[in-house]
Each structure stands twice: as C-alpha cells, then as structure tokens.
Image 1 (cartoon, rainbow, N blue to C red):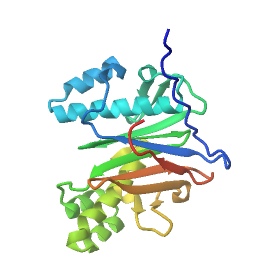
Image 2 (tube, rainbow, N blue to C red):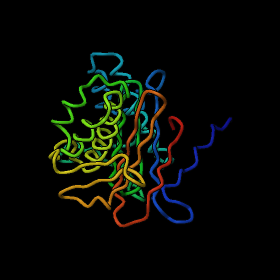
Image 3 (spheres, helix red, strand yellow):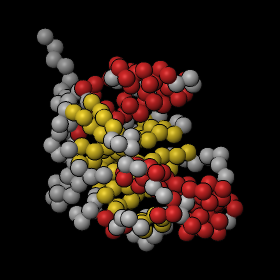
Image 4 (cartoon, one colour):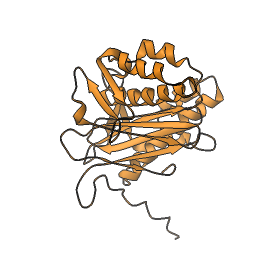
Length: 246
C-alpha cells in the first residue's frame, strides 16, 4: 500500500536560542484559494450568505487561511478540526482542541487579500487594507482619530494624505482588534505614531504603550498590513512574514 505524504513539520512559535515569541503572518489571494470542506457548517452558512461572489470567495479564503495556519503550528490537528468561539465584544478565539502553548490569532481581509496572524499566548491583532481606498481622509480622521493623529493627516501634502491616513488607520485597527474592542475604544483615548523612531508607537489614556509592539509593511503594490502585539515586559517578538499561504 502506498503511503501518503508525511505531515508537515511543526513550525516553532518561539526563537530557538532566545526563547522569544514568534508571530507568524500568512496571506492569500482569494482567487483560486480556499476549501469549503475545511469549514464548519456555520462558516459555510456565513459564506453562502454573501450576495457578491467576490465577498464569498474572500470569506472562504480567510477561513481556510486561518485553519491551515493553525495546523502548520500544530500539525497533529487537521484544519477542519479547529473550533472557535467569540469573546464578549466579538473577538474570535480558539475553543479547541487545547494547545500548548495556547495559540492566539487574528484574521483580516480586504479586496484581493486575506491575512492571518498566529502567535503564542499574546494579545494580537492584524489589519490589511487596500492602498487605493476611496475615502475622504480628512473627514474620517476628524471622526475616528485622536486629535494629534488627525492633525498629522491634515498637515500632510494632499498627494500624501491618503498614505498617512492609511498608516494610522491600519495600526489603530490592529491595536483595537488586539484589545478585543475594535473601535469601541474612544478615538481620543489613544494615538499611534507610525513613523516613530524604532517603529510605530502607542500612547493611550488607559494603557501602557511600552507594553506593545507594532509592525507595518506593504504587501505587494495594492495592500498595507499592520500588526499589534502585547508583548508585556517580555522580549521583542519576531514577526515572521511568510511569502504566501501555508
């Protein structure tokens, strides 16, 4: 009897020498990617409920990406076996099977791209947005940003204003998701500085920005990704950017 291919090796979640956590990020384009057989019945119902085919494919890609990413970190658990629950404000979490260390994750998608972040134990959030968003950056910044952030958007040259807005927006989305609150956080209670020395920085009325680590990078020529990690007083987290899907 011919044996099937060996299971993929377990991807480490901590640095082999320092022991510092590793946060792994994968991405996938929805065209030609996604396997409905891996999804739960509820996920398939949600996918089928989308009226636009592009939205359905994007949802399918995001859920497939999450399940296969988790199984790259714990290969003995098949992608279809993972179970999920939600916190009091809708933040998704693993319900089982239990893992050691406990896996945390965040998923985001924008037209043309799904992104998934997996890390051990830490509060984490990821966001992805298209760089060509049709939005009035001044109007949205006035309503959704800290006054200091809105001032940065307003001060940017018109040709650069959309990019400045998007760098702030993606970092704020990632941080809000990592907190499990999203934009339930009062917009004037925290601010991010995308271009701070040494990387993006946070100041917040009810949080210690020194406990947080951020990363941000372009994904191809159409998307921008941001990651937020509550590393606490531990060492810096290494963000591993995988070139594609698991």
